[in-house]
Image 1 (cartoon, rainbow, N blue to C red):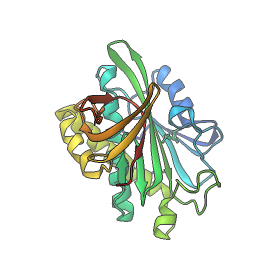
Image 2 (cartoon, helix red, strand yellow):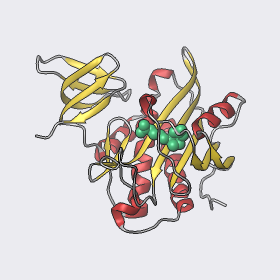
Image 3 (cartoon, rainbow, N blue to C red):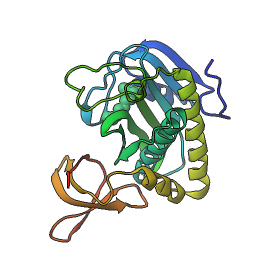
Image 4 (cartoon, rainbow, N blue to C red):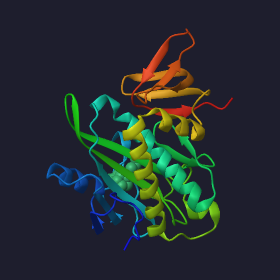
Amino acid sequence: QLGLKTKRFGWNVYDQESVPSTQQLAHQLAHEGAEEGTIVIAEEQTAGRGRLNRSWHSPKGTGIWMSLILRPSIPPQQAPQLTLLVAVAVAEAIQEETNIIPDIKWPNDILVNGKKVAGILTELQADPDQVRAVIVGIGMNVNQKQFPNDIAPIATSLALETGRTFHRPKIVQTLLQKLEQLYGQYLQHGFLPIKLLWEGYAVTIGQQIVARTLNGAIRGVALGITDSGTLKVQTEDGAIHYIYSADIEIKKQ
Ligand code: BTN
């Protein structure tokens, strides 16, 4: 039904009409031993979740609300690399389907004209030294013509940016193809080639930023990302900080 061109990703599909959250269902399936490449996709989420305990607006039939199960043999510390990998896959899929070149704001925001068109939520099931499963949630705003007032200033959709309507299964197909290709490359050659691709889309690097972490805010210049996928920030006193997870505000220069 999805017209898949992938070898493994997306062949085991849980295609749902309405779920609280595809992420929640994927967690459950992964726990029960679902194989790598299993996806959960839904027309509607009634309790979609974003990063940092935010909700994710997921109205019926308009976007792509999907979770993918991966089972890489990596230590948990390397998991942020997968968020960046998925961000590249989403950016490439958008570029291929729309000709728009999106921006990636570290770690996981996909922006078009400064507004968010897609987000990624990477969660782990892991032992202290080994990942059991990575649940990658992808939310992409595709055919929405408008957004609720509270997110309208910061959200956009492919339809709003292009004036076109998109066939979502085609985008899912392209997205899975990109994901499978980049993931294969990652398992074979490591993170470096992915990092280079990521840097090609990144808007955060070289900018004055404020990184809001659970331990407070850090202001400085984003120097780049490290080989493990953390953000390297230099504060005014010259100190270097490595940020694992945060909300980034890019300061206008
Ligand atoms: C973010 O930018 O905060 C991440 C948003 C992730 C949303 C997706 S939609 C599919 C999956 N299921 C969820 O409940 N969340 C993710």
